[in-house]
Length: 176
Image (cartoon, rainbow, N blue to C red; front, side, top):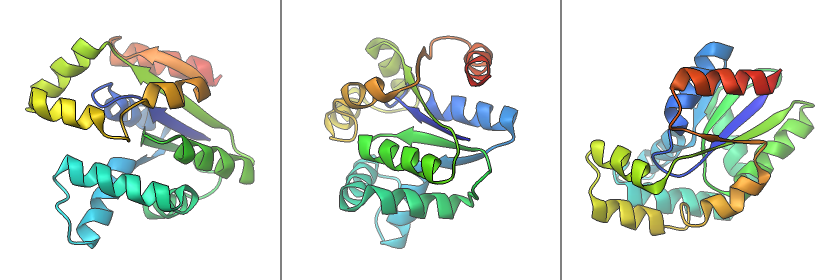
């Protein structure tokens, strides 16, 4: 089973991904971590979010299928294993994950997490991200129109203001 999480920065994708992976004993593939590895391999600043957004955009634009194939290999995924994809930012990446599921005769599920903009901003500021940086990140192509591109493809949309345990229980019920 392939389970992917999409949603804006600060929507809780990583926390929900980690909790679900633990409950399902699944591998987790953080696209953010994978792009950080790619940045380090290229001698880029892997701590600069703008660098990571630009590199991720470049890798996906070059060939989303190759990007996903290389990322799942990096994560140690084998067909038949459960894997959680944390941080879907591009429609073409979801399409490549969906195709991988079909190729391996596995269910692929897209979950869209959302939270009101004010709550997202509060969460990001709590991480030490300035209002100016949040605005810049939100205007990047990898964030801009994310909801418009990925929500229509989602199997389920969840409000991440709910308790983490409630979100996980809702997802597990949906999987049954």
